[in-house]
Length: 232
Image 1 (tube, rainbow, N blue to C red):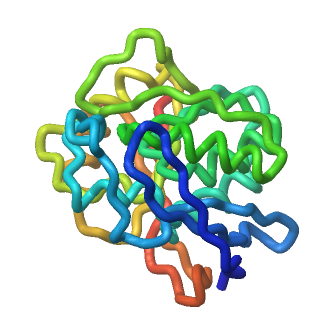
Image 2 (cartoon, one colour):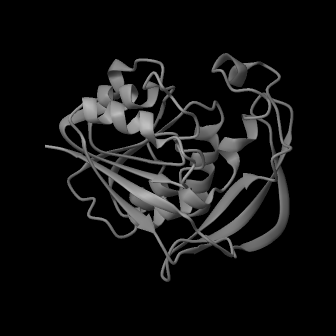
């Protein structure tokens, strides 16, 4: 269970104030991150409609700013995988634990998300951990970003939260994947994998799945899987 720091702060980026907290998140036996996140799911602030313009409802607004078990699992993977020489993109990064760990290890990584406050939290948490700021790009999956470029390794956690019959996420990945590319998705068994698998297969990605067993995240046994797609 991450240690809870009994301190709250207010951050006001031209929006109504919302409450945050700080927790120490254990990544592995040798590494932890001090993470500032939203206090709870009841936080909301979108006076200027920036989130709504991206299709983010009031109910979904806080989700980017919470620490999710799958995000911790992905950060653990980034703490042990070979990252040198790879150009990496994290999709739907939220608080970006995996990006922070990768950047701490000297990786060439860019984080992306649709939420308008993601970069603020990402930079703040980098500062809290004496990590260089992670390069960041807006990453709405239904949009096109020619300047974002292509990557050798694309990662994400808990991104299959909708059925996505149209293949919007797979299409975004396809626009930013090099011809030779690995895609690693941590999925907490939400049951929305079938359409994503089909659309990734259409892009000539080969899938291997590994159950995540024996991990205790936030005091509970984690149930999920690693989905590794490779295109050569």
